[in-house]
Length: 177
Image (tube, rainbow, N blue to C red; front, side, top):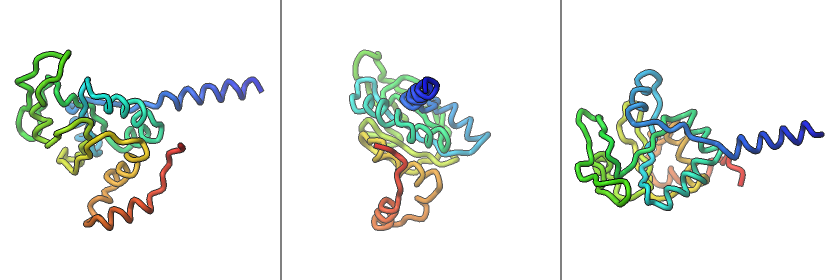
């Protein structure tokens, strides 16, 4: 009985600390060249409360972290950061970056992908071309249907809002509430 209790406690700890294997954008693009997968970019800012909630509750969800780790290269990108990005044949910077202690100007890469608010998620295909953007904080239950939808290329077959709604109604969640 004691062994079962210890095993249960260990399993509880492993599920409580589900983690996404975050990469930089450069790492993700390089990894795509070896093993093609889609990229999902989480645009955040240090001051953003909803971003912190998504980090803890959405990305901390075992189902979400598992799907992201298996089907995507997951990237965290500071929408106001100072890191340079080399993509699409050009260099993106944040020339108006001041310091980490206050709000900064949006990074050129953030602007290029039309991210106007954080948190935002951008899905990129296997060639790092944008598929779509999801703006605003999402719970694990709200994010889950999108992950297999884009990973499996089902989005290429959906041409209307009605088809999307049909997909969502048929979707079976793996998240235990």
